[in-house]
Length: 358
Image 1 (tube, one colour):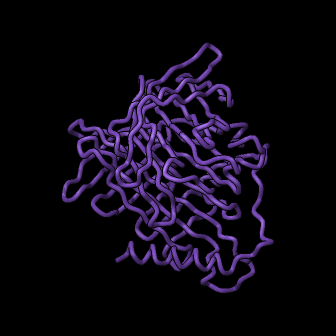
Image 2 (tube, one colour):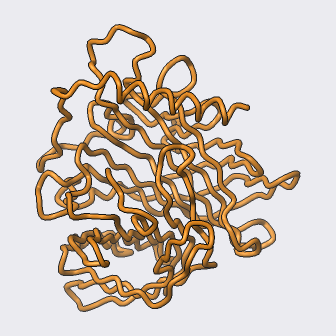
């Protein structure tokens, strides 16, 4: 009943936004040279059109079993007159996804929430990380750790994330281009190598887990240009402490429009990757019987570094890691636990079921 009520509320908020929109309302641009400030930038940036807090992790249970998880909170600002005095005006709408990847099951366990901001139901606070929809919450604690509490259909996550490295400001000091047009960009930083502890509950069984996670933070007013249909993205934590984020923006027929990323070595030095430095080469596809989408779930990722090329094989722990979020107003995409040489992480594939508009 709670989930149904949340989805109904989100649908109402989006309907209201379409009726009460203000054509002249503008969103702030993403431009180079912004100074990041922490912990303030862990919190919400409500003037921008869209924003997300995205955590993926690879953990082991006390019995040595491999599991993965995803927790994502989205915030969007509908085009509504900010001067509207009504408490019911949908000034902010929040969405959330959570999923558990278990190779022994062979498909995702997942759930989703959505609600308009306010009324004690949903909120993304300004000034520090604290975003929630009812009993789903991701927040930064006073000691600098992050905490997630998710009670979903069929599973629950109670996890703590301890930073072990400073944030990576992606792109040019946190200004991350997503296409040839400078306006197609986001403010973007990552926290890799988060020491992760807690519990994952499925049914009546609760397992203690320990591993490493990755937190991505992005906010934007115009993410993709008109020719883009989606992206391939990966965030990888390596056993030696190194970390890699790489993405490519795709156009029609799989053409690469843009690419970027950062490779931080184990010694802490980092290389910013430009569009010509990154190549994703699919080696195996998987077709979803549910949606008909075909995803390149196994890929070879090649990056150019000053010392030469680094070639990584991205292998999914299992093929069926598709997440269908259409019932909460978001797209179908593939969010997969993958392994590679000396590391593990997640591969995200969007725009394969239908072109994205973001």
